Length: 341
Ligand SMILES: NC(=O)c1ccc[n+]([C@@H]2O[C@H](COP(=O)([O-])OP(=O)(O)OC[C@H]3O[C@@H](n4cnc5c(N)ncnc54)[C@H](O)[C@@H]3O)[C@@H](O)[C@H]2O)c1
Image 1 (cartoon, rainbow, N blue to C red):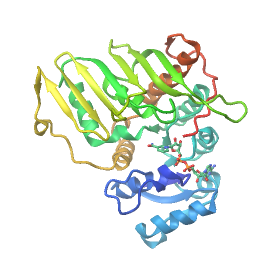
Image 2: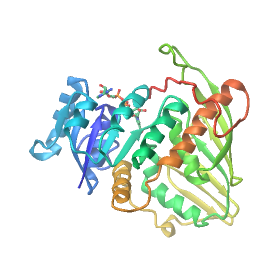
Image 3: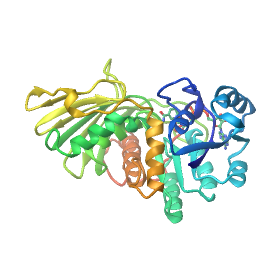
Image 4: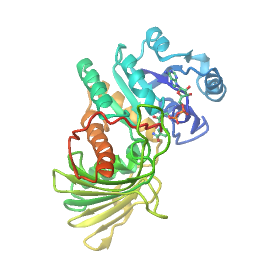
């Protein structure tokens, strides 16, 4: 069993689900259901959060097997961990990651948004590369089993050659809509070369930061020739969903929506697609990480994948502000966005 420690006991670590949920949408539930991981330690500077966690999740982990810490460094210095889940808010990622990268661990599962500037993310990536360990960024919806199956079917030619991917999701470019940015890449590929973006809004932010705008829309050009369209204002169309248009057919799919496949003008019976049973995305992600530690392939949303997604996110903002199409990699790596999701 691989030993996991969580830093930050907020919504995504523990509060979006309870031990009763069959498909938990939180790290704690995912680690609990993944057959190759065990939760051994958690850290949160808030005593209330620790207490709430203990009351809610304690009974689901028998024998008081979880150790509690106030700070990330206390946990990292005291525990022998294999995987660390970084579940603090975006503006805290950089500092916490510097501590995590000093620890003797095997993998990091980092919440989105990876960082508040490209420079921050570059530094984290270089730190992980130097240690020879992967950072996996949590674009959670990526790991819905049916989406992973569709990703592989489409790669194998289900709808011919992919030509266009349209993704739907509004909200903060880096903190929220980035899930769909990843989903567009999941089907278009992780080889973006340029982005034209439109953004709106902002708000008050601490000194030295710029506000995080919401996405109105973007066009993403890929090296392969595929074009991605990210639709931010999409009325009643469900978010976290995509339409993949190929030379022989199309797929409509999403985290919360059903799957519809057309090929050669005919509706395909989903029973022929062998779509897997539902499962919490977190246990799927943790299993990919431990499979990698057992000698398997790199988990999804690791290095080159999150780098591509992040470049698109920051380029969308850069393009929205400057009115220019941004060639990737983005030149401006210092723009510091208060991505507080
Ligand atoms: N993947 C998803 O679908 C999803 C959904 C929601 C949030 N998130 C992401 O998860 C991250 C956390 O968001 P949240 O809504 O769970 O936050 P939250 O505010 O609910 O919780 C964050 C917790 O971290 C603790 N904390 C902060 N710094 C700390 C430190 N140095 N050491 C120990 N504890 C520390 C705080 O006390 C707090 O309890 C963000 O990056 C957010 O974007 C992801």
